[in-house]
Length: 148
Image 1 (tube, helix red, strand yellow):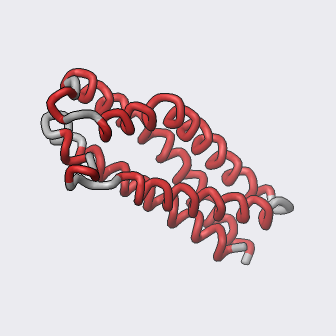
Image 2 (cartoon, rainbow, N blue to C red; image 1 turned 120 degrees about the vertical axis):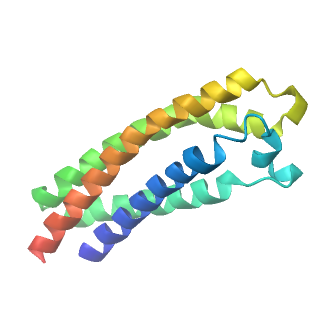
């Protein structure tokens, strides 16, 4: 159980790192240079990272919940992590991802700067949910380590 919880926690931390990279390194610049996030124009492919990290985290989290179900000290923080991650993913699925895909496919000269900047500002609001997820994962890891 400890190894699976540790892996899920590591994936959650990698997700926070990816989010920090995006809003500290990528987001300040791409609204004025949309080609930076357009893989077809030589820009970065954000989905390569995000799809793989989310799938890895979600599979590890589900496995951790299954393995820790009989241990409330581990299970409960895992469920907190699951809830916060689910809220972030649903919000992203209905708001952020469709808009990001539209920005990636748009002609760079036709991207509305104010809408792009608003997207980057709102995107930062996902960080607290990611931090709650990480907090739950780290709490579960400590609890699992104490059991093992």
